[in-house]
Length: 368
Image 1 (cartoon, rainbow, N blue to C red):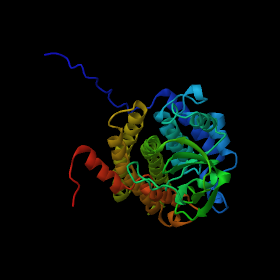
Image 2 (tube, rainbow, N blue to C red; image 1 turned 90 degrees about the vertical axis):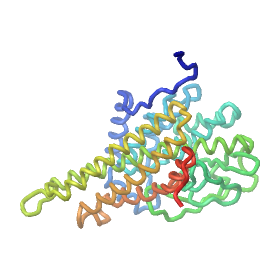
Image 3 (cartoon, helix red, strand yellow; image 1 turned 180 degrees about the horizontal axis):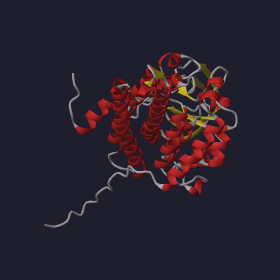
Image 4 (cartoon, rainbow, N blue to C red; image 1 turned 45 degrees about the vertical axis):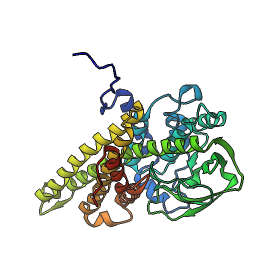
């Protein structure tokens, strides 16, 4: 028997490295100090949920905005694995920051054009330093394989109000349009920690980055990375919901016993823990597949999104319900998690959309 000469892909690495653990500790400490849940509950009643100065500290000082950007362009030269850790922590804290939109989706889109456009490389350096925030002008619900909007106003663009530049897809290619050359009309989102807006670029505005074919491929690469790493945000959110629920049910007493000792609640929390184990494996697999450029990345990302979005919603629902009356109040942060989970469930493709993608990628007929 002769050995096959065909290259084989390395098995997925689902474990966290020491570097990733250190990064997690730094991000978690910053968010706990500057953007705790009580701080956010106060911010969402203002015109902007963003905590002043937090983006500069996280993106610039810690350097997480440039994790996906090569060192030659001023980035950290890390990978999607490290970016996934950041998103886990942002999900835990339900932090209003344009990290997913700018440091992942927009950055990955520009990385696909790095060798073709000097303007794209220059913009990447700005994004990596945290000096500029970019947003891809597509609706938040756009899946990686969805039809892409061309020209005209684009509704439901995530973090549109925080963007300094928009990546706008037109019939003749992709353009970088400064925010002052576009009109942004705020919309009322379900998730108040991720603002939405309708973006209308000025006619003929912006600098052309790529032609139509390269532009579409780059946008789809950005959306795929966003969908894959969104699973890590959903994982972090679900983990916080379970931990907070366990903590509360240990402290809350009825009939002189912690309510968490009641068998029915034990079973619910145990099942949720099992769901989280699966979600962690799926999210880490997606991050590793993107980091290594695996040929199976589209399939692994679709699996992660189809699974993690459901787990996040279920964890947030259980958090609200098992907190009893206090879980239904505006003063408790459980509603922030539930709204983010429900919003994420349709972000970058709904669960059903990703299930259809899985069926198509593995050659299975979708149920009628």
